[in-house]
Image (cartoon, rainbow, N blue to C red):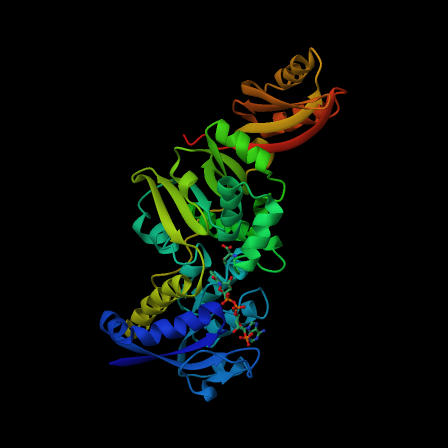
Length: 430
Ligand code: NAP
Ligand code: HSE
């Protein structure tokens, strides 16, 4: 049986899972692929760190060249994370005739074009299933199983940490700070949680999904991003009363030949399948012209779920190595150069919560400004008064975001308006 030698760049949470999974299921993996995978070297930063792996010490190295310059290694598995040196190592791996499997959304969302061009130039495979939604198969299904569809829309809960925080706020009434602390204590959120709670992690993932779904390169810096720091338990309670759940969504859709791609909190109808995706789970909802609506659900992170995707990629590349067909089947699918639609052109409904003077005519004034900007009101709630202030919640019909923003700028300046506390987009679910 053919032996395919692997070099791992990184052996942390995901790398350890990959090593254990390759060893645990080695016979099944060999039967499926027709080759045995041998982990030849593993790059780590700290050679003295204790590792719970049944491997000889000599396998570990702190010199990337030990892997990149080893002619026997045919697959480099990059599980270090971050942009550099990961990007240079990936490019060097192709130049040295190696195939690459990676879980690194940071580098793909920022430098995908360069990486795919290098894979094509050297006729090598690049696979990255684990880079979006950890253990959920979504990259290959979009690239292969759904390839016959024209994809209309992709909606994703692609960040487990923020989904956990919003779930705790919604189900247990915890405020944002409490829920974040709990997520940190459980190891979901980093000590610096900004990549998760400010939506950056989700933006990287939706950039990758949008690139595949709409067959055009979308990079991280083209994604409009808002995080969840300003979501309050009050908004969650009002949303519930109106029949919605608040989720942080990555949204990508094609509108008039342009790509609308964004990450922000959304009020999603309770009946929508994404509304019941809770805790750290992820889900990606895809609408295609043939398949209709379909949802991919599962664990978006963690040692073994993520290793599941990485090992699947290693096996696919191993088969191509064995058959001598690397670089032929897994190339870049960004055939078009579609324009990215600006957020101002979004057509959407909005939820807004504001505090106003509790006086006659105030609501009429606000409605008047909204009407001047073609913003039509779908519903209004007034439940609480705080001293002399009334709290009003308005949900609009669909409007152009630029018109809505112009209306809000005027409303903020109206004398009876004390404060606009929240503005959140509403996903119709249609
Ligand atoms: P991690 O636990 O921090 O592990 C990183 C590994 O890379 C460690 O072994 C570290 O060495 C090594 N490393 C980092 N920088 C290095 C450098 N400059 N030189 C040599 N070695 C270096 O990270 P992880 O959670 O496994 O994540 C790995 C990748 O998977 C990232 O791209 C991440 O976004 C992606 N991912 C992770 C998850 C998840 O659940 N964790 C899910 C989906 C995707 P030491 O061990 O010596 O520190
Ligand atoms: N930090 C990510 C999340 C997992 O919370 O979903 C790694 O992509």
